[in-house]
Image (cartoon, rainbow, N blue to C red; front, top):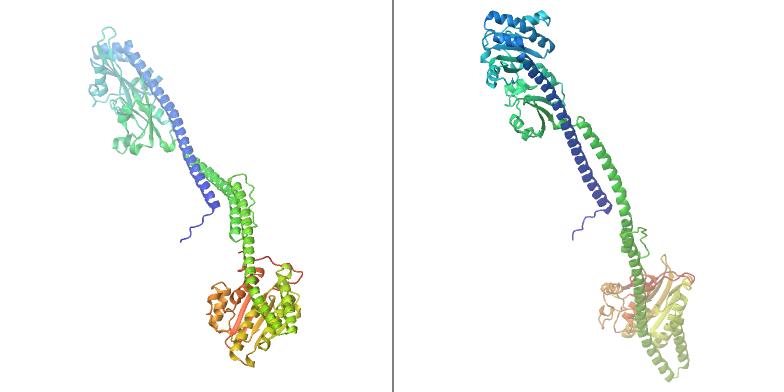
Length: 637
């Protein structure tokens, strides 16, 4: 099964908070920038419309002046007399009288480029700023009419005749009616009629210097690229700062939408969507003044605003990252503490507690964990006690299976010797049997001194020696330094019993003195504790049988399945021997139960060389505390 990848909750929380912060910060910056741009657009629109309104007011002022001037000239008596003159001489006389009125108006308003009166009966009266200066003599001389131009063929002349006295304003154009002069002008023309009859007498022409319009419009700055232009009712360009580009076709304006638009403000479309138009219609002419702005220039410090937003965005992102790390640590710290406690419990440490002071779900989880561990600890303690009690009961039951068998044989021997009149032997055997059971009982104690265990096995061997006589010999060679150490009682007797059984049986088969069974018991200190050794001179065991015995002691096979009932290998697990296999297993488990899995029995045997059983034990002195009961494997059952 593939192991799932581990993700730290601290990293997960930090990344979640950081991601949320990034989304909020970026969203807030975008919204704030959009609001700033929209606010700038609205402010710019309001400001631009105010500027356009001011421009239209200024131009209307000039146009109104032309209307007023045209009205004054129309009603002037000298002008009327000039138009009524029937002959050239009368006309020259009237012109001399009317010309001062025209020149004085030119002198008062230098924005008027030309005043012209063209009579239907012939003749023309012209006044304009002189080319060489502005003194009175130059003004009275007046400009000269271009001989190649017919005034009646000019559009302004025709429009005036068609409108019957209504003033007509033309778009900007090059005025070529004056010889050697071609200025850009805006023309006002109207028919001059008889005040009494209303009959037309001639046409009045007033040219407004185009530079006035240009100066008014160019004086307004709308960013780096913004500008103002003017169109007439028909969509003809009156003024445009890039007029040459328009005429050459390199630039175009959305004239149709400007003329159709009823709004005072609208945005361009398509490729022109970055452009905004502010429109103001002039009352006097119907012309439209159009201001062009660009969205990218609404905020003059657009780049500075972006840098400011970027700086504060980075600042708040850094702050949110620090806060997310602090919060994630604060949130994950009790969880990590709980996790470490759980890992300790997984390793078998049930004394650990999760000290989580948080008054939230994690704190409740920690409290629940502590309760759970305490309950598990109680349960394990109860299970351990039950298992220990069960194991002790099983071992006691096995021990009880061994003792009655031996007691029956011994009593039978006592009866037989009594019948034979062997009084001394009966006394010795009965005395040895009493000592044997006195030590076996040991006032209910399971742990006794080595000296008592040696005394117990000595009594057992005394009884067996009386029974088997010359078929059995034994030697006990135990170092005095271990006699006061403590061990589990009755661990030597089952081993000696097996050694005697196989040794005597072997001696019986051979029938010779050399085959006498000899049992040796020795003991000494080791680096890990002490060893007691029970040896015999029996037939020994093969390597296979020895391996099976060790496997059985490790719990790999039941003892009664190791060898057959008729085997004469001399092994200690012969099932025909009452208590043999079970008794040896009993000894090994009792040692491991009290002292741990590193202690117990170890067999050493070769065929025809006998068998040795090593009992590995700890060196526990009388004043040392006894270890707690353990399972056979050295740990909790």
